[in-house]
Length: 610
Image (cartoon, rainbow, N blue to C red; front, top):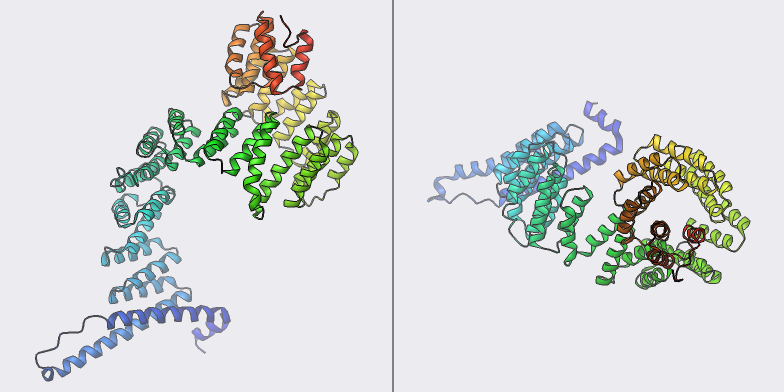
């Protein structure tokens, strides 16, 4: 028994399958070679056919011999590759390609080299392929990508230029958009950006392809830490097409990267007729930055210009609900449901609808319209059966009706298959207790959740806030200092600690230091600026406090900010303006406890003559 027979018997049916596939592929390739050979021009007939009979027979025999030899070489190459020796298979296939001049064999040789992870062999094969077929787009693309993988970026400009020139416009745009990813792993990012700019030079002035080409160059310049060059590329793209989506997204990316001048460029873009997805993405960015009022403004413009965008209505509704604007939230939710309910069979849409119904249930609960709330919860459960959020809202509804024990039992009775689900249950239970103003008990339950993930600073922050509500400022300070020690850039903890000290009138210089530290990370956050103004007031710097309050209240008429701003105005003797500010705060949130306490303490009645 030969070694080959033993090898085949050992690997059994699996090797047989691979062999059958290899034989089939080899046969196809060989037949294709044979067909191409047969179609090659026949030698010219001699002047006297009878004079050269032997030569004619020799040509036929030679052709048959070469044809058979190629067939055998291709077959052996495929079988060798299938048996785990791609290096030999590659060599045989490349030799067959050179002998036959068939492009398919060059491609197959290159593929074998790539499958065996031999980039150098693939490069040799691809170069030979390209040399034999200079106009082949397949050869051009293979060689281009292999050179990029091998980090030989400077050799790709001509190949890329040829590819772009040969592509129809639709494919050209797709290729341009893919280039940052194709060149993404090369070591010299600056060279990559330069090569792409050189290769796409013919496209940069073309109105049809220029915006995409400039956007691609901008993204690659940004990857090379050339922020100024990226901004210039974005400007060029917008100059060619003021509504180009890619140019708008690049501008937003530059804003997120903190590039000077990018905000003005994005503002210019958004002031025209921007692509709706850019405005939506900008709204999401503003939400991440906690600039909720600005995000709401963008969404209001988006829903006005593109009322068919369901997602925009849902996010707008959420923002309005968060800002205590239930009427506006309800309008947005109704529009979202009108657009989305016909597609409720789509799981993604069903999940979004469930969220909308839950928000409607929250609005109804806040209005004490419990039957309506129950109806919305039933709808949410129908489109998203077993959704944990629906159960939580159902429990919240029970608690609002005085059934706290039943509400907690509902949450505690939900299944929990793992640590994450157990923690989710504990957090929901703690929230019920918080809403019922049982802050000490809520803190204990939250402590159980923290034991599951002891390093979760978000949970520790929430526990600190509960300690403050429970009247235990020393515990709050201890928890906040723990967070700051663990994560100095957790600016919410720094702000909370500084504000608490300022509000209690203790350690005011230290309080200002904590608030200033928070402002380093979020210099435009209106609530941190509120803390800053409040501590300046407590330190006796009334005019500085007024300057800050005037700036933030113009953008954020929050009830708590109104309480502080009005008190500073009141103490400065401007009582009429204080009353006007408090009235605005009451309109935004009539039940805000901080504002009500401030008015009671100062004996002020907004609307009464002063």
